[in-house]
Image (cartoon, rainbow, N blue to C red; front, side, top):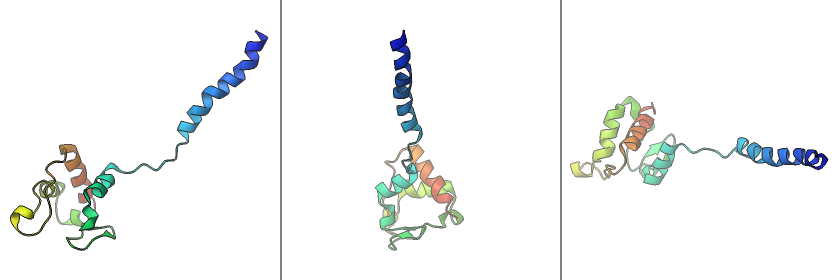
Length: 109
């Protein structure tokens, strides 16, 4: 019994340290929408909050011009078919991704 009691603090220490390591994980969490914007290459053509290209309209205040639903529709249809520009259709995105993108861009006002 005495040997067991000597091991209890060690067992407690070994059990609590991994929990503390998880609790102190300060890895920055990347916003899934920002990750999607990066993956799709939106900033290659569009300026967003001071970063990106100038080939297409600045999206920094797009929420003041279009609703979230209009933005989703624009992402789904693109503009290449209209002959206006060369924005591709992102109709391969999930409905959830389209809604997240629309909401995020709409909130840029």
